[in-house]
Image (tube, rainbow over all chains, first blue to last red; front, side):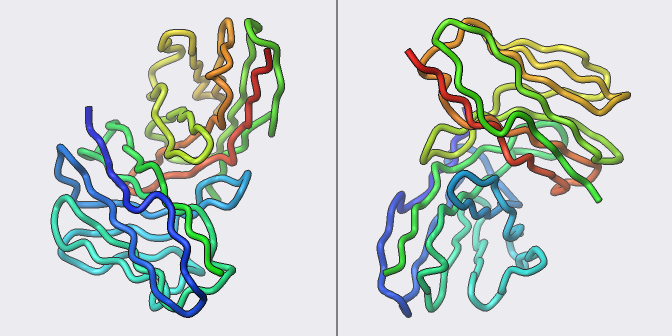
Length: 116
Length: 112
């Protein structure tokens, strides 16, 4: 079945540095991918919709300059957390859907970001 | 405002017992409702999908129901196993490609 690969699974970085997270659709093309953030025991919160070849669409309250999204190909989207701070520590998950309609979202296994 | 409410927030049951999770939504217009299982530290995995015309659908020990009139769905787990311990998330799709509303999930713990 369709698989979404997310890398890295865990990352620890120092405050002020930037971290890049990759999301790849392994056996299908995804013109649109989604990035979520999840705090402990909380639901997924959509951060932005990543569109191949164009700018990402950010949800209200999400800083575009802090969470840079690049969707350079039909199988790869990246999320870069710039100038990370401890409050950015969270679980970040991406998802993609093979086609519109009722096909399921395929989620990556998430990236646990810890900013020290 | 589109909303998805799940209950209970958390649940502990003994291995082998059955349980039912609830999902109420206000998403309109409605396209479909999907239940996902999320193991700790992993991404969610789809269990079932319900469209407007479907009332019930099973996937092994998981049975989902949908009442589109009352905008309610349930996920029934039969003969629970320890591996069923996870968060179960209800996601409702409205019309439009990226119109998704997530519930906060029900955390299920199956104890031996």
